[in-house]
Image (cartoon, rainbow, N blue to C red; front, side, top):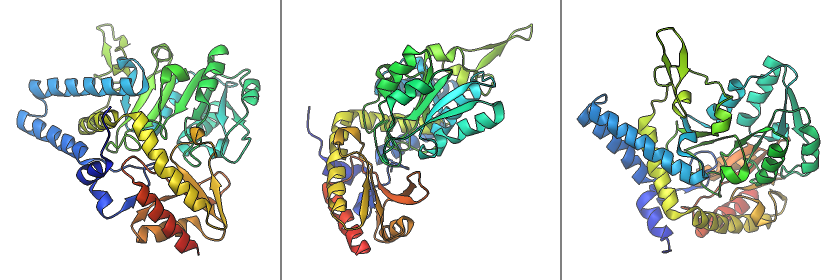
Length: 391
């Protein structure tokens, strides 16, 4: 396996690194120039061949096939279990709205308001609309972990478990494989929000044992905005009702009987973001060429430097597990004597882009989310600026 020249990669593909230290990849990551070119090439091909010509139609079918192949490789699923959506939120809402809920049904969630709102608000709305009971796992520490023994108690009489793979605020990696085994043993559906894991750590739906998973293309996969992935297992697709219906997803017989098409077309009645698909396919090719193992190693090198240096600053509280194997490259800290949002704005004035995020207690913390194009030097510079601003 040849080494990756990250310096060359930064210079050629990420022009933002010439002027700005961008470590907000847990929100939206910059797209490499090769992805931008792929989207431009797609539009030019459509412009030259005609957007609704037979040649363009064949081109789009081939593109979507290639994209699904790469996604299937990324998360270890079957090609036809990949549904293209706009975002994680849309994918999770497909589960919320598509299952046949009855009053008295129950869902087990992790941490309540400590979850990302995309994987909390839909279930709150469902409970208010359908009378479904929400059973919230109590957190055993401030990093967001929970007790598997409590999970085993709460699942009695429940229909679904849902949680994030990696927490957006602390970067803690949740024990999704253990949860998947519990769900399978008790015949429960299992839904995973992989927004903060896909593209930065290994994601394997077969090992996890989930029925549903959603993640965006525009975070750790470095793809364009407006496109994401909804994984739906073949077994679960039989009980999930599509939210929309149209000529791309169903047929109508002469007797006016509607029949949905096979997966994944049955869930994609209105998908038209073909330029986004071209961009995401290029970004996936880019990510897979580097390799998730190397990305994980590079990310953690940068994150460890950042974490160690910030931890030395007085009156700063660190979040996230001490054990590196249990966290992503997200580095979160709370300045005890300063406002996190103000600090984020001050850093932005110095061309260092971080984010302020809720930790579940109402007060925001500062979150850095470095990716493979960030350097160890950038980590040291960022920590130095934080130290100066908090002095």
